[in-house]
Image: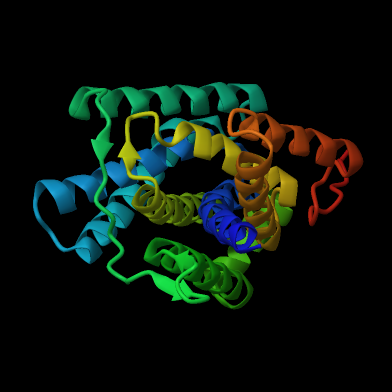
Length: 294
């Protein structure tokens, strides 16, 4: 029983990382109607920035995290401005191929700078582990911080979308960008802001993920990026609560599969769940049916 609770807690922790990454996917898709497959590599860049700041320059962990967030925010806006903005009117396929190209570009830049060797990431979390049930159940500081950070960010993001002027502009653009532009909303600035927020969340996710799983390579972000995309689709792409629920469920499914079925098959099970969800409910758990304009 204690083993199960321990796996469940680890699953929620991993799921919180997926949820943070999935929020970036879901916002960009909901507002710009494009899949940013380079999102996973922004996570990796964020982790490398924090690694360089903390391990390379001896800065305090908080400064490392802030630098990582700033670097990824700038990177996200640059990617949008250089790679995606010229493709606003292009086909979905052109945007998708560009996103994959940006992904490989970021991976190879990291390879050039840091090499292919695995770096050992120093955890940025300084909170001690929580011992429950006479020390039988240990919840690491990383797990506590990851889950709390995810909940705070989730609540903050929903409040921002509902009550701020920029948030309402994002909702307007996601409904109908043409009409939003006629109403005086700056669509380009709104999309750039969406990328900035998504990339900042990716930086936080990267730092928290590498604090829990300390191996860092130029390919660190690829698999979590794909799984977070699965989480976003699972919860209903374009829905912020959906990304959160999808992320948590996916993390729990993955950890329980590793524990009780097979660690080799865990990834396959995650993707099998996606296929089943899409067959039963194509819009995801909280996604809404979109009417095609004819």
